[in-house]
Image (cartoon, rainbow, N blue to C red):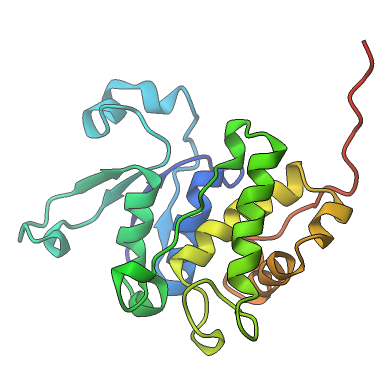
Amino acid sequence: MAPFGTLYTLSDRVHPRTRKILGAAALNGLELEIPANFEARVTNKTPEFLAKFPLGQIPSFEGRSSASLGSGSDSPFFLAESSAIAQYVADSGPRREQLLGRDAAARVEPAVDPGEGKAEKDLRRWLERYEGHLKRGDGRAWFVNAEAEGPSLADLVVGGTVLLLYSTYMEAGMREEYPHVLGFYERLKEIPELTELYSGPLLEKRKEPEEA
């Protein structure tokens, strides 16, 4: 069977913006082709790439058929912006309802992107928001679905942000301050399709800034 589509992104590691896309594809059983020779700031600046994606974004997606978008054509179609790609991939497989939720109001996006140099107080506000959401009532396994239903796209998004924080900023002691977020991350890793994608070395101790 041919791949579901081509995802133009880094081939040697997982780009933070592609993690949710790859997670949705894994849960839906969809194969995404990632070109082995793709080179950031080189491949996406070529005339061939810019003819498909004029802004040269990473990641970008080339679909095999645009019929599912309502055009009735078998010609290729192109998507940019990681959230749009993730939504499309989530909507295109057997776990669509699990990934997207039963209604649009249930979908969740992180309030803070920790990759944008936010101050610690902003990161803690983000963590406190999600810690509170997960511990409501008897505690929640996932942000949208019941535990038996499995993670939604919202969980894949938040999980990627948590992994980025855990690997670059939050040392062991700080992770323990938010036990429900930590438990959520551990549950996400336990899902076989997501284990490799959401695993990685975690920061144990932040380096103290050198004195001038």
